[in-house]
Image (cartoon, rainbow, N blue to C red):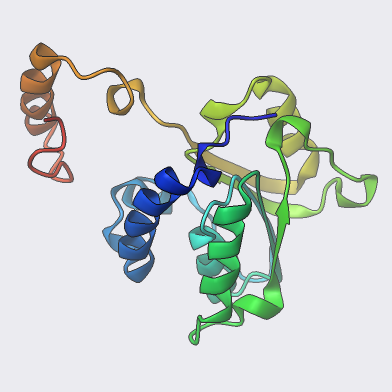
Length: 189
C-alpha cells in the first residue's frame, strides 16, 4: 500500500485549506505555472490523472474540452473532495466528463481495453511516493495513444527535508538568484 497520509484527518484538514485556496485560481499555483506550457491542448482527448488528489487538473481538463477524464488516487478523503468540487463546478461539464476511482498507484493495473487510449497521462506531485516507479512509468507509456503525452512533476527534497537553519537562510538567496519570484516570504522558515 502506498503512503497515504491524506486520509489522516489532521493532515487532511490542514491540506484542505491549501486546496481551497488553489482551487479558486489554478493560474496562481507555482507548480501549474511550470507545468502548463508542457501540457498539450486536451480538447477531444481522453485524459488520465495519476494521483489526482482534489481533482484540480481533472476539472481543468474537463473545462478545456477533454472527451473523458479519469482521476485516480489512493486517498478516499481527497477523492470525496474532488467529487464535491466537480459537482459544484458551474463553469464546466465536470460531473459528466470526469470519473474518479480509488486506486493505489503501486497496485495500478491497466485493462487491455485502455491500452493506447489516453492522449494525455498527467501526474502532479504523486510519483515520488511510489515504491516501483519504473512499473508505473511503463504502465503510463502503455496507456498512451500514439503521439500521446506523459506530463508529470515530482516534489523536490528541498521542500520535504528536515529544516536546517543554514539551508533556511541560503534557500531564499538561491531562489532570488534564479529570478524565481514564486517563493513566498517565510516559506523556508
